[in-house]
Image 1 (cartoon, one colour):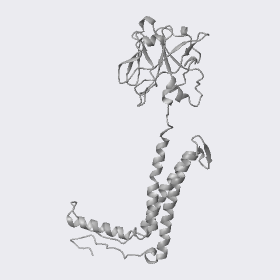
Image 2 (cartoon, rainbow, N blue to C red):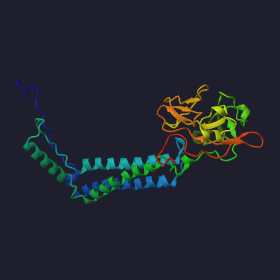
Image 3 (tube, one colour):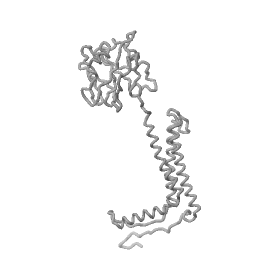
Amino acid sequence: MADEADPFADPGLPPHEHRVQDIDEQVARRSERTVALLFTISMLATVAFIASFVAFPVDKSVYIWPIGHISALNFSLGMTLGIALFCIGAGAVHWARTLMSDVEVADDRHPIEAEPEVKAKVMADFAAGAKESQLGRRKLIRNTMFGALAMVPLSGVVLLRDLGPLPEDKLRHTLWSKGKLLVNMNTNEPLRPSDVQVGSLTFAKPEGLEEHDHDFQTQIAKAALMIVRIQPDNIKDKRELEWSHEGVVAYSKICTHVGCPISLYEQQTHHALCPCHQSTFDLSDGARVIFGPAGHALPQLKIGVNEEGYLEAHGDFDEPVGPAFWERG
């Protein structure tokens, strides 16, 4: 009852009501089988996740009502992983609500610091909880739970493979090859030497690459060219002069710092500037870096003219374009 010293009455604890599982062992075993079934479904869903990753191609789509057309791979991965995680959670909740001890315990507050007595009590409570969980007794639950928890991380391991296709040697090659015409990015017409004026900056792409191609962005990110014309007497690098045609030189447009497209050119100094981090390249001296964070010069494409007078490539770049990587040759 409430009094002046303690105006709030202690409501106490209601009488403990035993669950049917606490009374009937047959019902408890049924709950055990239910939990084991959920953990088993989780394991099967993990296996299905891995199988879906292997079985479904990236570009395959299916119709799912009412969502509509959706990637078969994404749908299967999301569904199987969701089922695997849900069944582990549902199994744990069902286990706790039906088989673990649910006796109400009132415990007084205690200081934050851990006294030896408190440590001893914690260990005793842990031992009691382990015993009440029936983990040792309910071996079917224990084994299936360990199986489910052991297999779910495999989903994350498989996802590492989905970070992207293996590059192999794709970073070392572009669409440029011997005889490919240099096509103006703006007019979509092949370039002649006369189309490139001294002091101008022209952007080019390989012959046959069109903007409507499904892999256009991937290919242009490696093959984009920056073409300038410099008086041959002003070209300092011997190889640059040999790989040019009447002062027309072609360099990769992709900055060697983080891959930004270079678009600024100063005709008096022949310097090309990357607008992202201000890396500056001297196009009259092998496109070497004279300022900024870029680590190496821009790759040059060897060019010439064909019988019809159009500029053409004499091969691919002799080194990978863009930022450096650990196998740069």
